[in-house]
Length: 91
Image (cartoon, rainbow, N blue to C red):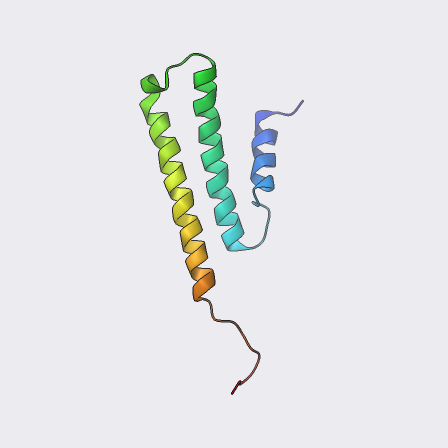
């Protein structure tokens, strides 16, 4: 049986949090935060806590989704804007 910390760490690594690439780590953190908040939100619903009574958690889920989209867009724009290296002069 794993502890809560082990479970969260495993999910972070599975999302790419252990990769050396900065963009991969940024995306992994955003996915990790979104999934963690969503898990808490779903747990509240499962245990009969009305999501409307817990508005701030629902707002956090939405904010985490927006944050993930923003990071994904930023990473995508930078990869498109990066010019390829040719290794020398080309005609």
